[in-house]
Image 1 (cartoon, rainbow, N blue to C red):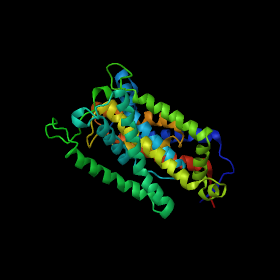
Image 2 (tube, rainbow, N blue to C red):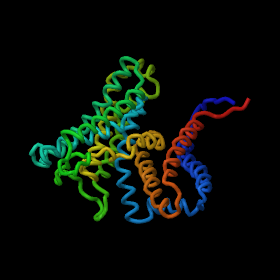
Image 3 (tube, rainbow, N blue to C red):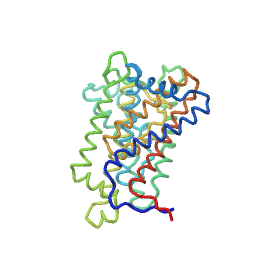
Image 4 (cartoon, rainbow, N blue to C red):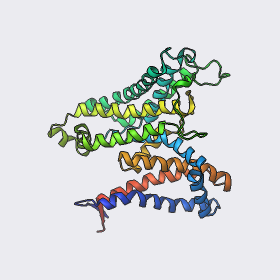
Length: 353
């Protein structure tokens, strides 16, 4: 068996590849459901109902989708330039901590500035911290050839240990009864609700706008062309005059900033303070979402809602028929593998000797 590159990839095949991959994943996951002794139809029905079947279910899905979309955009921007950012989890926590440091320190009074001034400062601080956490690994890759997968992954653990130290030290909330959590943001700095009596906040609009702006950046700007050229062939891009180092720096700053903003928006929209368990792996899930979307910024919106719906729906399904919630992780992980294989087959055909 060998793979032969296709002369031209069908646009229809590229669009249908993620759909086919998800369908194949549901077929494979059905075997695990049967193994657990549950009816497949009812299991998937409860999964769908738990994620999208009511106003409450949909609101919970959209709430969880917000940080997933932002970390998915962070991965999309980096992967487009072949900068494999595996550190979005650390950048997420770094951004969240920076937001609280600006907007919640000094007994919750922040820097005693008006909320109109303090809120943009808080978001800017989160974006800057996230960007700086990726800038170092990006420059080490560009200048020294250091594998950014290793450096960004290890920085996640360094950041989490740093967050743990701060939550048990100078940023610990004295009124938290000994629980390791930061002080809370001022109520004036929290994001408003999109749907009354739900947890859906205006951070969802931020995510949507940033997805559209990222798409515009890739499609209509010179910087976006440079990023795509660098990802397609770095040597050819350099030969054609693309400023490689400058483009790598811009990609690192933008990708890290999006992940940092995800942390700040999660704090301002949902938790109002930082804890070590505020993220169930949003940074790592963002990689899955970026790949499910085919590295398309607008596709990230749909992929983020899909993954969030599976995760939220799994809780309802588990309570109703006893299938472990880990089936959601299996569906998401298997979807990623299936999408990678499907995308490969749109670019190559299998030849049997």
